[in-house]
Amino acid sequence: MKFTHVTDIFKVLQDPIRIRIIEMLRFDQERREFFPDSSEAEGGFCPMDILTILQEEGVHISNTKLSYHLKEMKNTHVIYLVKEGKRNFYLFNKDSLEVIQAWINFILKG
Image (tube, rainbow, N blue to C red; front, side, top):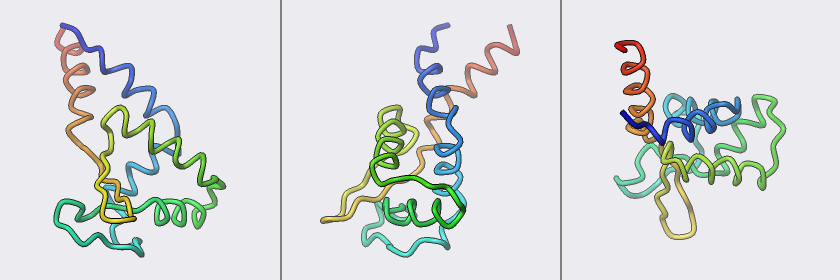
């Protein structure tokens, strides 16, 4: 069985800031200031909200570094982007972690 995407996902998950972003997208909906208009982006976070929450939690990160993290996460499909006019909203793609779950199940059963 081939799991080529597993290492890419693990690379994304090795950074604590990215782990926190995933948790934020999944569980911190009430902390958003900017809300999307479309149902497609419902529950999404704009980068400004992500940056604000991280900084409130004592994570000192620049806009550039946040953009880098979001790009890496988007490239591995851990998150996805919905554009609404001038604003972008990021959402967690829980299907992306099914690759890891399948790999772990494969290893444990083997």
